[in-house]
Length: 430
Image (cartoon, rainbow, N blue to C red; front, side):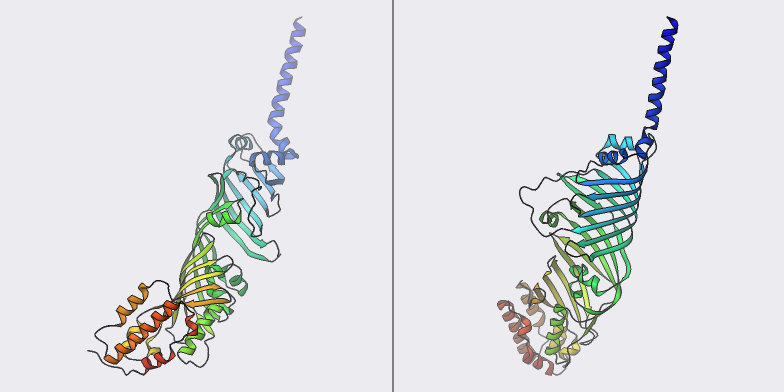
């Protein structure tokens, strides 16, 4: 009887040892078998994505490490290859804490995104599936964004280090990125100017003989994930600055070409200016607002008109390149003559409003009537002679007429009036 009880104890102990050994070896079994990918997909809990891997290191108490990870979206619009992924938790802790997964270090990811068509999702579209929340510290990333109808990438950047956060707000997934410098003195090409940069700086669209470099810093990025493009446009938040270094270009852009032609004809320059440049290190701020890109204080110089002839633009450009831009032009005094009225006009920035889509643009005056009133108050003063006052009133009346008609000012150049102002003699008003 005692021997039978003893054998039972030995059997129970042996089973316990086998079970303990199995549990101890379970992470290794998972890591070395196809179960590995099932566990990874269970931890991620993102059914719209399929995760696979080649190798992994699982442990009960050591952080999860996965090599050669592949993540693909079901509709094939997103593909991510990761050389190495390291978590700050063990696989079991990740599984218990899902969907709050903590922090990951991701080495050499390659992100390939195919932009979807500009279509509105219908009412039968499946609801957005909430993704896990996590922080990803990304090292040496390669990012490619392409249009589904074109294999040529619209964005292709390499060697990117950044820190990202995935979060859920009001049943919507968001990706936010900590401030990052994307480019540092990257050589500007015509292709770059036509595939994204033209939304920030519309004067660069279709320009030729471009020389110079670009530095781009993004100070705020917060993008919704898994939404329609209408919702994406409403919720996306992007802010940043870019610097242009030693930048010059041949005039081929419709906006700069029409402004240059207008002033070439106005001041009888003979030939239309064919080149513009920027002050070295000029910094321009931009941000995305409701699907449109706003830029502020982009100043170009037309040296063929005058070394001091500048055009500063601020305004909005939509994704389909609809433009609503304010152009402020400072006319150098040398082009207006040497009279007191010429001095006042050269001291008064003249604003134009440029609207429409390339190449069909309309150049008019600001819609705010206060601008005409402020111009009148500045030009009309007791320091002017009677002849200058008469010309100042004619100038203001012409501007007011153009303002009321909201017509294309390029078709109504005030050439006779300009000649009369230029013909005024310089008068010493002491």
